[in-house]
Length: 180
Image 1 (cartoon, helix red, strand yellow):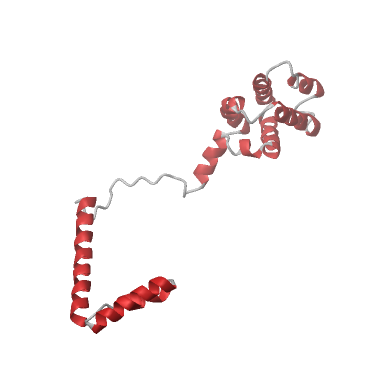
Image 2 (image 1 turned 120 degrees about the vertical axis):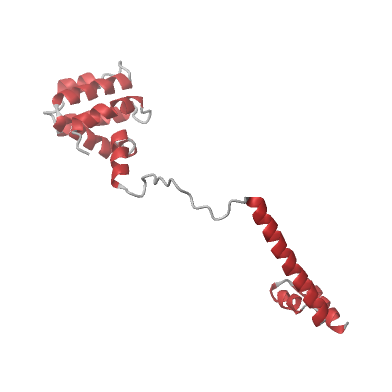
């Protein structure tokens, strides 16, 4: 991303002016940060003008951003630092930051796959039909084995993990099947 901070701020200005999380208190913190730490960027007179509470916050913020763009790239960079320090969630929501993050992270890029591997084009009903057929065959095999071998030993094994009443019923059914 070869944009200068001034160009980035120009791009982010509309977002910052519309951002509801930047209330009066946060804008004042940003102005004071720039005024106290970097008086060459924002003098006391300019800071007082931008902190005028009679002017709506979005207008004051817009004027501040225009003023900083006029001051140059260093002033814009210091604004981004102050924004990152005081309002981190807004800083990471800026359009230029989102674009930078997406360009650096290869996992967030949308991978376009023009061809989709289709193993079966018959649809879900075909699958359900095959599954039902397989389940039916397994059930018939299970019932047929129970008649031939004289009872279902699987029910006795299934009783191991159940409560006492259910265990007694399954074991009784298994014993009945063996006696016949």
